[in-house]
Structure formats: C-alpha cells, structure tokens
Length: 370
Ligand code: F6P
Image (cartoon, rainbow, N blue to C red; front, side, top):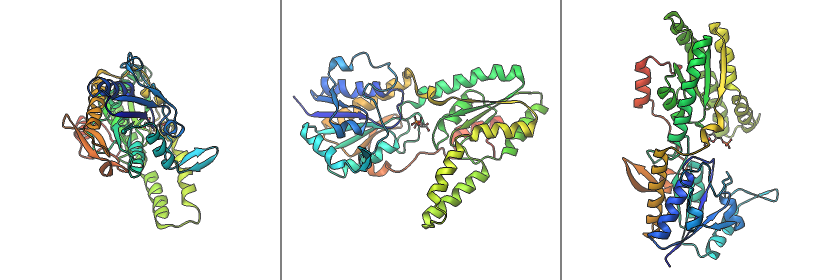
C-alpha cells in the first residue's frame, strides 16, 4: 500500500465539494494505491479525531451531490472553541495527524482555509489546499469551483425577476452573495441583463443609481433590475469604514474602533433594504427586494464545476504522490499548477476595475453606481 492521506472541507460549503472529494479519493486509491480518510466538520474533526474511511463505497454516487459528505465548519486551528475556551489546537492536530500515520492533509476551502492550512504547514504538517468558493475570490487561481453553479442560480433568478418587474413597473433590487468581491453580482448581472450592478470594488452614489433608473424611465422603460453584491458600499459608507479602519490601524482606542467596526458591519446587513427605500423616494417608483442568500450555494454542481473540481482533486492526489506539500492546487490558463501557500494566504482576488466584464457592462449602458 502507498501513502495515507486525510481530506477535510472547511469554510462555507460550495457546490462541487463532493466532486473534488471523489476526484482526490478515487485517484488516490486507484492510481496511487493510497489509504484515504475524511475528517468530519472541518478542522474540528481533525482536532477530535472524528473521521471516516473514504473507500470505494463512500466515494461512489457523490459526484452530483451538493454540500459536502464530510460536513464543514468555519473554525480556525489556532482559535478553536474547546468547552467554551478559545485555544490554539495546532499541536494536538499535528499529533492526531501523526497518530493516524498520515502523509498529507488536503484541505478543500477558500481564502480562510488557505491561511489555516499555512498555519498547520508551519508546524511541519504536509498540507495542500484545493480552492473552492462561490465568491470566486481565492487569490492565485483563475477559478474556484462553486462559482459557476452559483452564477447559474443567480442568473436564473434575475431572469425570473424581469417579467414581474416589467409587469408591475417596479424597481427590483436583488442581493447576490460574494462576500467582499463582486464576481458573482457582476457575472450574474451581466448574464441576467441587470440595469444597475453594484459591487464592493466600486463605491456607489444612490443619486447616480436613481438617475440611471429615471433615465431608463424617460426612454420608456418603466422597470429596472438592480443587482447588488452583499458587500457593496455607498461612497459615504466606504469613507466611514475607511476612517474606522484607520483608527484600528493607528491603535486609537477611545471610543473602541473594533466595536464601531462591528456595529458598522451589523448595520450593513440591512443595506439592501435601505437602498431600495432610498430609490423609491428618489424615483417615485415602487421597489421590491429579493435576497438570494444560501440558495446560491445549494444543490447539484454545474457540469463545469464538476469538471473543475475533479481536475483539481485528481491533481491534488498526484501532487501528494509526488511528495509536494505547502501548496494550493490552482488553475491558471487552464492548467493545474501548485502555488506556494505563502503566496496566497491572506490575499483576496478582487474584481479589477478594468476587467472585461466591467468594460462590457459599461459599454452596454449598465450603471455601476459611480
Ligand atoms: O463565502 C461564501 C459565502 O456564501 C459568502 O458569499 C457569504 O458572505 C458567506 O459565505 C455566508 O456565510 P454563512 O453561510 O456562514 O452565513
């Protein structure tokens, strides 16, 4: 028998996780004659030695399933809640890893998981990551699986909002996930024919959005679709956040800027509703809000995500067989390449302001709110 590997899924779930687990597991067993185990619920399973053997049976029939058969969590190895106390559990994770006779740990996750994997690899654990997220914001890879599926779901929702917006002559404001990156809102807004697309990378002016809706009305279109990324901020809110951040960076602690930042983040959870109310006032048109939420992360992965997850997964198994670790298994120019975790951890892939999707949207006359 060859090497032994552990797999875990961490962070928010993403369509394609099971396809990736299957890709790693089947090629590890069939091509490299490895033993494979899967830890339950992210890094917590590694800490608690909760795992299942991933043999042919466990890996069968999961390619098209949404979610993750292993369960996931957002917990961090260096800040685990252990019976109500937050503790650094990295050493005990390394011990468990060694006790199981594992040669490598493959972590499927986004940017946060890359940071956590680096923390473990700095304790001499051979770790690899495979990028997944519907946000598409993992630095160092052209694509992460889950994004294509979420893009399909969000685009279909926007398509469906068109007919009701048109019938009632309303503004439909649709909030799309994406965390602090605008990929999903921009992609679905473009694919779904949004009239306004607001993304975190471009602070928006409510008046500018209202003007573009009134411009459409004057030209005979009595409805508008506003696609807003959950992380999009108005110009004044961007400035407020910048000021709080500056006080955090300067170590200015009276009043406590961390508490202010938390209050600011809480306030943002209703920003889409506030935007719709402001647009109603400024345009005199009725507005309705749709928050797509977790429906974007659920269900069966698209064929493109299955292929991507399978390619990344089988490549991860090959890299383990070759003795490579401390890397993220990235996709660049349609080629799978290992990228050192140090180069990606702590970075985020934002939408460049000159990205072709933004250029196309603007040339169609779509308002980006600026
Ligand atoms: O990272 C994926 C994501 O779906 C983000 O788009 C969103 O902000 C976040 O996770 C939601 O997290 P949770 O499922 O923990 O509420």
